Length: 294
Length: 282
Image (tube, rainbow over all chains, first blue to last red; front, side):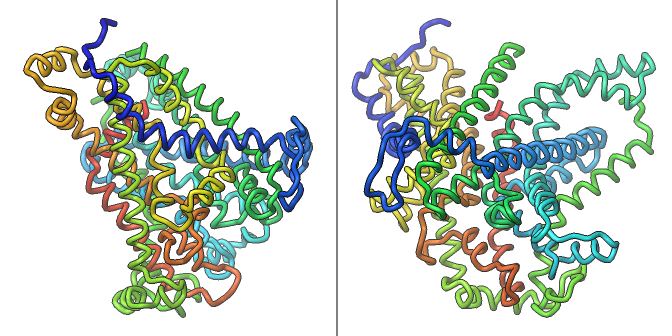
């Protein structure tokens, strides 16, 4: 790269980065440092005395069956959400590629859920599916399916996954459409001339060529399910019934703000930080590769 | 086109229609529920078509009905949410365009250190530092203030990275020409860089406005008084599936009021939004 043409000012650039840097230091680095520090402290409930205990909080948290349960819940929730949201979006995107007329209209109608807050999405689904006044719950019951997300853990999980996935369909749809448009038509035509049918063309040509988009979306959807769905869990199930939908982020909040176990909550925060760092690293490694492809 | 039989197209349309039905149904049904009486809602199944209570429900909700059940009027809630969404969108764009400008168009000691400091914030979402950040807010007296709702959320790496990426595509000749013509850094920024960034700013604005409008965890933490609530938080407080007193027809009106403004923004600015989303995340 040739050296860029730049302005010679010496003081101005510091002033320009100052606002962002100040906010970053006060609201990001200082609290993150505090979380790290607190995760190694043991405090009595009144906050009067504290003792440095190294990794004891981590050992305690990781040995806690409730935490292990929360890891499992998060894994099931994230994978199910990503899988449902991505497969529905892929199907719709492939269909949208086929039609000529009405494409714009379909897209316009498809992006609505993006604008709906996750917590509201959760409440709408709970309105539809709650056992006392939910219309769809009534229909399910009439069809002979026992359904009660307020009492049954599996039902509750299905409900939050549906709400979380519904909200993410728009996002995935837009990316899959962009990905599909980038696939050279000549490849698909060549396969058609060689006699490959619709289904075969999709699985042997389109799907592999979409892999970068799919992988990117997998990371994004996992991150979304990990962090942005707090509202859904908090508004719909409150982690329950039992602890059937208590995700890691919900547990950090619950232990820190509701149960006031500071050391544990801080240790959980640090574990989450490690997870985000891993996810971001994966995302950026992949982004770099994509840049090389042009 | 290959194999473009009529049948194939029909199937595609059919699948898309079913898809739209799934995607739009919860929103549509919320609207339907907001036009029925409480009694109708409490006796499911709810009809598929809107009822005749549109004016009654909406005027009741707007003229004090929401105030009665939530302790604060829907106008205050919408105002709070709007301030938060606009504050975050505009604040984020301002501070990140400035820092990206500094990092791309100037050379100064610690430049890369600053860049990395900003970049790493990507890995520190509010969810992983809830308690200590809350403590900072308390120490700075920011609980129940607009500044508390907005300022901590306006620093993040994504917008800065986006502007940096875009600025790096601007040819050096342009800067050189501006300098030869005697333009200083501010002149260059306002007369050349800002106009060139217009579409990026529009795209980012939509994404950030939605981000601000749909926040949940943060307003939940930093607001205690009802009159500082955002509409999403207030809605959560109104709903109780356990007791029978929930005023569902008013809740549904409030839900519509919480959903419609961001949908209008997304649909109205669709062109920039879609491009911005797909390009900025690459």
